[in-house]
Image (cartoon, rainbow, N blue to C red; front, side, top):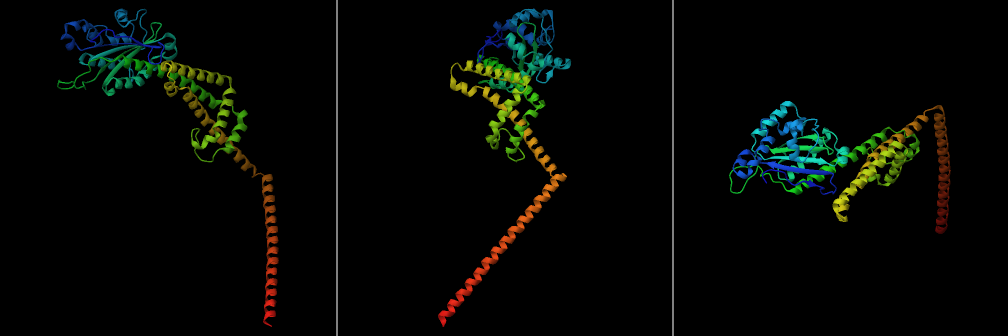
Length: 406
């Protein structure tokens, strides 16, 4: 296919139409001119390559304009004017000079130009991709793998995009092209650009990566809030738990929740974690939200696996999320327990330097010395008695020998 609208890819590997991808591509003008059937795509190529002398795709993404209805029909969207924060690439929001340079490169390139619309289900988009910063971070993380999967060199790709919220479905407009030709073709000399065609399964994998990445971020966001709140809680009610744990912990300088030497203490640490979480209503609410989102993620994965429990067991994530949270809070608890135990030992040491402590130490030393002298005296008496018995035995043996000689 030279141009025109490609098949929509929705549902994806994890089931559920949370993300829909519409994609298309256009050849350069020289290749279009070689085939009369492709002439109808010339205006689209000009639009995407900034060669139409008017509103181009960068302008469409960048700001509201009354002339957008044609493209709205083209990509399958109708309704209100676009609401965009502007054009961004992997480095962030693009300024006027950067957009001018991009237009120049688009006009000069012979690369295929791909266009993509990534649309989110209304509630999913509202919860997970509400701002340009999130959209930019998302594409920066998922596109390198996508480019690699379709046989492109990531460093040889230029992409730019914009987040639009004009309809009920938040969506991202994305365009990309190759910087230089890097492909060999059988029977042809030199290097060539891609032919443009990308199999639908690659877009399905991209959709899955997008959905997985966004839901993971929400789970990590709640996790980080739990950790942050845990650090500021009043833990005095758990002091005795910390003291008992601290006394039992190994004396090594470095201890970690997941280290082997912590295996005997992990159950105790987890019990303190639960006490900590349930001691604060806000923290308990966040923890419930965290576990709910983790279970939702596993249900999403289970839908993808379609009854293949072996595959599901390998892919499920809820337990990993929970273990990660336990480890992070567990390390806080270990640090707190060691600190309290160390302070307890310091206080005891300081207590020994009081007048009462000094009197106790003096009495202990005097008693120890007296006991040592008593033991020494007893030992000496026993030694003298044993020695005298030995001398008496020698005298007796001497008398017996002399009697035999006579």
